Structure formats: structure tokens, C-alpha cells
Length: 254
Ligand code: PGA
Image (cartoon, rainbow, N blue to C red):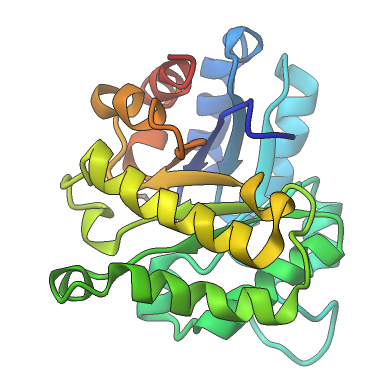
């Protein structure tokens, strides 16, 4: 994996049933091989193993799967959490961590988000570690400070970049609101993140892919992903339907 290949990931959140997922996979089955970008889906965890199996049987080309959350312990009395062992067993290669909805509704902290991300790598999975400022933080001129705070435990707990570590910049005010960051706003924040990663981890940090997320659609995907520090997209709403997900994936090719 490297920065030369864009990564387009669909975060289905708590949408898409098993039947919806199967229909989606059948719709993209003949297309994936001709897409240059690397493709990744985060379905609900209860259906991910079924979808992996379905893709192996029916799909063509490479499509990765991941879970939307992961715990740092392998087993124990942790009601409701997802063991990294079982995530791997389900056929997943990735785990989303620190998504703003986890932070906003489920008490995720900067430190717990990082612990989840590093646990994923310890178990041979890859993290997509999400960061991003809220509107009031942007308005107060604190965007860079917030990104620094969100990344601080990462640099404290990991001396170098885990292999193929992925960061997603998702300004909270752009998620599910239809209000996308402009390409210039996204690029400014992502260039700052790259400096942070490089400052802490050297060239392995600078080589991490940084995705943009927040109201990415077929209409704005090309301009966003053409920015020098945008290595792909993390897509919510527009990833639920096969046609728009594929259109965004194709936009990654320039
Ligand atoms: P959105 O969600 O594309 O619907 O704004 C993005 C995300 O939450 O990852």
C-alpha cells in the first residue's frame, strides 16, 4: 500500500441490511476490476462476515472489508465490544476508529480512539483513524490545535507509523450535512496533518495515506482527491448506493 494508490472507503454506519449489502456487491461485482483505486467497505459488523463470503464467491477484483469499531483487548468482560481476533476471523482487513459519531454519541476519547487503532495494527488489521474539528472549533480558529490534540496520544503510544496506517480528516461540520469542505479547506488541514505525522514519525509518517471525509459525492470527489494531500475518501451517505460509490471510486483516477 502506498500513497500512489488512492483509497476509497464507504462507511455504511447503521444503514444497509444484509439484503441491501448483497445487492450492492452484485451491482459492483463486474466493475471493481476496472477501478484504479483501492476499495473498502465498512458495513455493520453483524453482516460483514456474510458479505466477505458473498464477495469471495461472486465478486471479481479486490474489495476490502472492515468494521466500524474495534476493541483493544482480545477477550474478556467487555460487553458490547468487538474483539480484534473475531474481526480478523470475519475476513476483515480494516477497522475504523475514532469516527466523530463515536466521539459525539459514545464517549470515544482521543486516547481510546488511538488505543483501538493501534490494537488493530497489532492484530494485523489496518486502522482508518478519524480526526476532525467541530464547527465551533473551526470558528474559534482552533482547527489545527484540535488535530494536534487528537493525534497526540498516537505519537505518545507509537514510536513510528504502523505499516499502512491511514488517517481520515473529517471536519464534523461537513459530515452528513451536505456542506462539504472546499478542496482548499480540506487540503490546508490535510497538509497540516501530514506535517504532524512527518514531525512525529519521519518519512513513515509522511507516507501515511490521509483520506478526506464529509459529504463526499460524485460531483465533488474529483476536485477533492486531486489535492496533493488527499489520498482518497471516506464516504458516508453516498457510499450506500452502488452507483454513486463507483462514481466516486472512478473520480479518484483523476
Ligand atoms: P457523509 O459521512 O459522507 O455522509 O458526510 C462521512 C462519514 O461520516 O464518514
